[in-house]
Image (tube, rainbow, N blue to C red; front, top):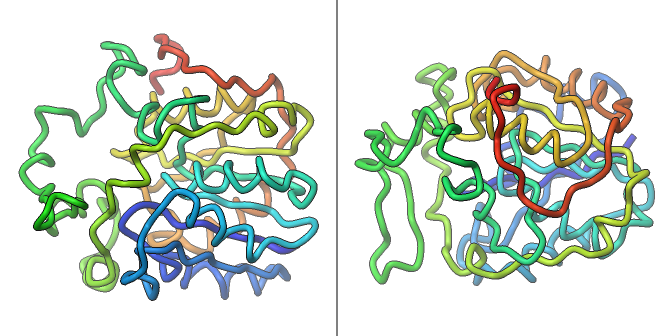
Length: 264
């Protein structure tokens, strides 16, 4: 199989560097997308259309689309444009867009409900470590915040490596309403969701909510938000296993409130 992976916010194609060789060992091709404004394309202007096009340019028939975190929304937008090329889509600690709403909508307290507070919520020390760039065009994490949000189960060596590569996340693509009408019609689309049991960003309640909207039973790995970094071999094996997931319900384009059975 050929896997085409989209990184999340502040990251770049480098996020998948440890997964690529593990996937090769399993006999699969793994291609990482570099989104504008990130990684080697850091100096390019970041737009939601540019994100979409970066994925479409690399898509091939039969691809397994993989989206991590906010990259899952980008993968969804690409799948909406070319559903004929997608054999499976896997959300890794990711977000399913809400039709007609901006990318971050599903992570707000309004959509989640008051009983679904994140371990990293509005009163969390994490706020101390989120900074704005000059001109307020993007936000970034100081190291302690990046560890809390992304790397809470990683060694210091891995944190050093990954944190040195993070870039500020542009606000502009986060403000654009997302509409993927073709995607919602693909009820037979093979799809899956992988969640980290120690994830403080796509925390258990949010993860279960996304899996329910996808109509799948989530697959769990004992990691934080970045299983591709802390446990790349185990993650690679789970990613292959995820392609065998069978949907148990329809795709849901609207937001759902978290109920007690989905609090993880």
